[in-house]
Image (tube, rainbow, N blue to C red):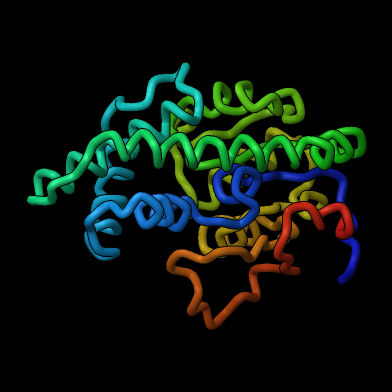
Length: 235
């Protein structure tokens, strides 16, 4: 482990600060298993992908939504898709899975606050995230919005990861040369690769994978770690 020589930090949000490396697809699937929702993994993955596309294309998520409302909307679209496909589902389970996910995120972020407070005292911090236009409401609900001098959100700026342009915007917002900025994220393809392409230093939170567990090349990640709470050891 080597310390990074940096002057600022860019964070990803989902899967990084709210689940400590757990992909939301895997988190939600664990809820389906917990409540014995009668669908198989392939059907769930189809419903998950469909819901993500619908939420990106349709104004399902309102700017004032907190994260519980995001998850409830996401689960409702998934259940709509699966019911239309012929599955007999109890809709009350969608709320239970959403509430569990919200509780997980809220508890994780609460534990992350001391880390963010410490880093905020040393560095300018910016967030770069693929989200639905309500990320500031989510961060405000969780009490961490003040730690970020700017939030670069895909639905707001009109560019999504893995396009390096969204990280270029983050670098512009932080006001430092890219080589002085550390990017911390859980997705190799959506965080490490585009961040490295714009010249940032990169630290990969390699946690619970969801489709990225067969990577052959991880050279875009300068270093790896497995718990967000160990970040202080790198900076």
